[in-house]
Image 1 (cartoon, rainbow, N blue to C red):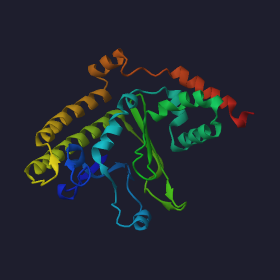
Image 2: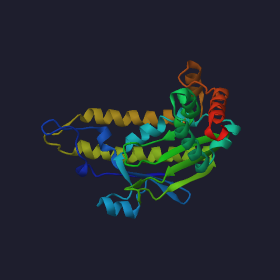
Image 3: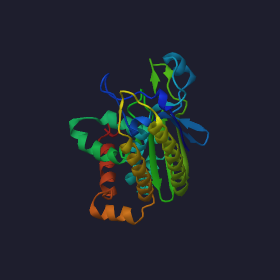
Image 4: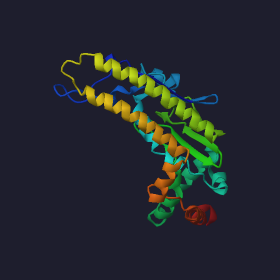
Length: 271
């Protein structure tokens, strides 16, 4: 599902300005990444935009760990199953798009609170990747033992040139299969980063500042982090302790329903 290719360390730009440049573990995660779901590839650029921009990589290119940070931050929300009646309101790209349109139409100081309460539970399950031009929005809804993945990637440049090949759509899979695929990505990423770190340890960086001890410590830390994230998705003992402590509060679904009803009742279509 999640694929990646790390940049050769010789081609990775250091952080900082001339005379004060540094290299660290986060910088070493620079590379391309993409997500394959069924017959669709997310984070893949169209040939049209690559030609328009000139010399653009085929896939999204950035520090891959930034993607990991943004994605795993959603896990406490993704793992919480949403009620079936709310799932029916958001289970397709078309329905999700209609909700977004309604939010924009209803935007006003009087409706601000209702909009916030109606939408935050969706936002907490959505990967935005705002560091990309026209970034796709990918939302994850778990309902019992299934997860629906919905993407809106129909953004264009200059009102005409599509950025992403995926466009708009949705796919469904078993939630356990979803977790297994993330585990597989984590294992592969850590293996490749181990090689990346070893290459960095052997390299002469000249005037570029690099803390090689810290590099090794970060690599070890990441192994524990991936284990933690998978435990959150599986709702093990750790997840339950964090929920009981208030770190992952349970969603008040009745409040969400009431906010949605308020918006619907105030809609111009009901006027």
